[in-house]
Length: 227
Image 1 (cartoon, rainbow, N blue to C red):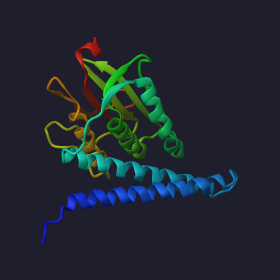
Image 2: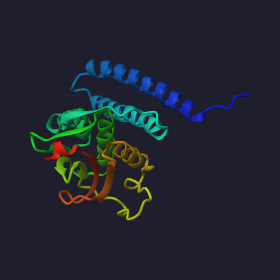
Image 3: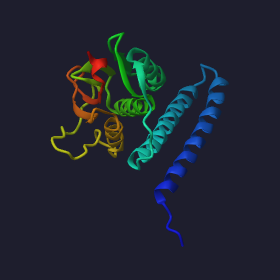
């Protein structure tokens, strides 16, 4: 009997589950549209919708994670205006922040551009923000800047921060209650970006702005872009 590739089966199962979640979201949207704003059930519907959106994004992350880990993902990089990219991320994630009465903002130079894979970085940012939503007390901030030949994107919150700062090569978990897959995915996504043999990387540290956790993604950029 031919050996079964369990990883491929799991990837296919995740893909099917993602499609089912998409169908549920479509049906839930119809239910929400037909529900009066004064209906006491509307808030519950919104919370269910946001949970399903988070689950859908997690399935996307797992599919990318599988492809990255198995060298089955082809990087598609392009030049993006960070102001537009981050505005899109905040717009997509704002309902989840509103559902928890949290402020979600971004900050970057209006002319800042960077070269990266948009699909991967969208997944990384959304994963980090969803995690921050669990621990932030009032605010989440996404920052972007160019520094020493790297595009730096950080997701910060005003929660209690990481359990400890990682000082070696062992992967560190997100704060209490997370499996660490989010950080692993972020790390694989960052290291997939290579310029002149220089790989991207991530940093887990305390937020100097908000005092909570800060996940920083550092992506190498061509020299002519950083001048």
